[in-house]
Image (cartoon, rainbow, N blue to C red; front, side):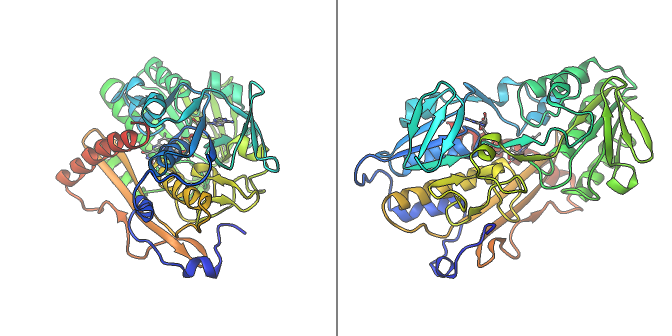
Length: 430
Ligand SMILES: Cc1cc2nc3c(=O)[nH]c(=O)nc-3n(C[C@H](O)[C@H](O)[C@H](O)COP(=O)(O)OP(=O)(O)OC[C@H]3O[C@@H](n4cnc5c(N)ncnc54)[C@H](O)[C@@H]3O)c2cc1C
């Protein structure tokens, strides 16, 4: 079963509004219930940190342990802004101090090494074993190394960064852009669907173009795409023509965009029409659920984790909830906003399940802003709820920035993007 719900579950009352609306069903936070219950959350990114915080907001009597090896988490959202010189790394880095000091969450700076679904335990890298009543797994993505011939983890770390997990990869790509000569060529090679942040590679092209236009205006960006179309394509194409005429060239998979292999020594990419040489090569490989989810047997043959969308409980291992990029969520894109939305739904469902109550069908929401230039933003939004087929987009909800939006509208979208980032970071880690 991939994300379907039973007729009985669906026939229960639907709560409308954003994901957070589901929290209202508890009639206020802080009602203790029964003996201390243990929830362990693996992964302190957009999904996991949201779940940990909202569990505590809903019921402070639950003992919540967040397992995350990084003391400081660098957000992928706005990492393209760092590449374009519009933000610094420190401006996109958060810590867990407020979650532990302000909310009483036990934060353990370690990796989860294995999960025993039968014994309900998580073993950490140090060998320490944590017992759970409910487990939340939000490990994000890992890459299908070997899917692109010639590309490997060590090539990514040294020569051709993917920069699709923010941090040292972002810094490496930024450094390569700074070191590149004027008149150089940047290649961006996005994967086929599904992958993390569908508009991400195209926002990246835009903000790299912004940097190059200011500092190295004779340079060029070529996008070699494994797809025939991409998210917000018409809006991106229009923005590129307006802000960076002639600088960004997009090649779809049947027009020479398909990458056959990469050659790090020659700094080239082989495509069907021939070899493309470049000075900076950003390969974004195909992806799957984070390794711990795969190792725990939570993923299916497609590489992602099937869940019951009512509670995001695994359909493979009961008692374990998988949220964020790692799970199948029907038409919802793999975004930070979505991961956080799902984190709230999972927290609400877990509190009810621990009280012996059924979860309430939620509504979920997504908005993805992309910046094409500092004062030129675009967005896509969607509202989702459960149907008998699983998660479905609410007809007529959401939408895109209008294609004929004027300069004032686009400037406002850029302003909303900044506000979105401030708000979501404060909501999750603040
Ligand atoms: C360039 C770029 C731009 C983006 N822009 C946007 C945007 O503007 N808006 C938006 O909504 N989304 C954006 N995204 C997507 C967003 O970053 C992801 O969808 C989001 O981070 C997914 O959240 P997650 O919790 O599933 O995974 P993550 O946020 O990746 O968190 C996973 C965490 O799990 C930890 N972890 C992994 N394995 C283990 C383990 N074994 N034990 C313990 N911890 C573990 C990792 O260290 C990591 O901190 C962007 C992505 C990219 C790459």
